[in-house]
Amino acid sequence: MKLFDVLAAILLVIGGLNWGLYGLFELDLVAATTGAATLLSQLVYAAVGLAALYQILSLRSIQRRWNVSAVRVN
Image 1 (cartoon, rainbow, N blue to C red):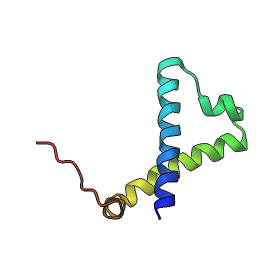
Image 2 (image 1 turned 90 degrees about the horizontal axis):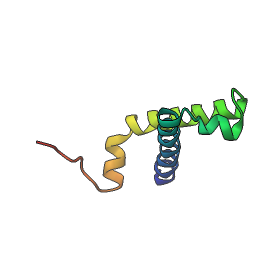
Image 3 (image 1 turned 90 degrees about the vertical axis):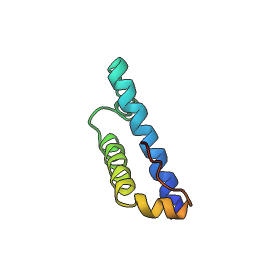
Image 4 (image 1 turned 30 degrees about the horizontal axis):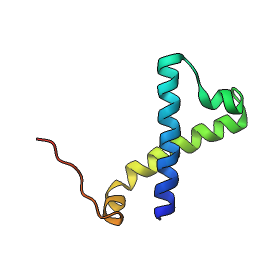
């Protein structure tokens, strides 16, 4: 399962960088590298979305596997 955790983290970094570049420079890195509205770009977007869903649904189990606890802010 750690493999899925790492893959999800990589995909979320890609998605975060893409959103940051789009927000700052209106540059869609995924579309620029894979072609706008292509099957490949749609697969990348879907993979990033699935990675986010995976992280949301498995947050507690990921914390247990990696032996970390949530940071509490007072």
